[in-house]
Image (tube, rainbow, N blue to C red; front, side, top):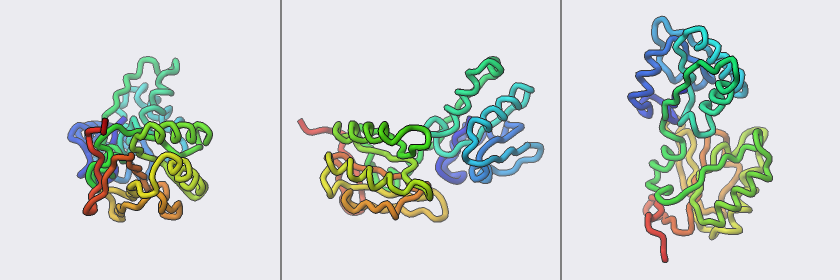
Length: 238
């Protein structure tokens, strides 16, 4: 299971590049497969974004038949991505003898953070705002707990066409624990052709500015925003 980073070959690690080249079959979401160069003799198996379990089972079936298979994931496959989906299916009896290895990639959170400085320079939490696989009540509890602990936050999957209210609700929960001028980084399509990164105060976080290609970084009480740079000190006050 290979992480390709947030976008394009510049974000691909040498290990991931080598494994992609060595694979006989590439399996993945169509958008992510399109980022991988075509190689003679390789078979490509694109699929829709919402069939992760089926994709994992298909890849494991190929591997069980002796094929060298690469499941392609964006970012890091272990962060809200395909590694868990593959390992869940691989834990079932038919695939007990299929070896699975995870090749890490640059995470969206770290890629976005690098564009503005070091907003995740101290302790931080990573939370997905998608309630497709877990109830919103759990998300709200985790947001409140992380915010009350004064952790910086990286918020994945903040919104989509069918999920439009989660960002506004998250802002309300965070404002119970954070100052209105807390720096919030909105990073869209980092590394891609339509990249846009900007910093706004938490109170001005507008859900209309967010979609599934956006990641949100929320500072802690110590995070600084100066000269277009956002950074969280490594030392915490006594």
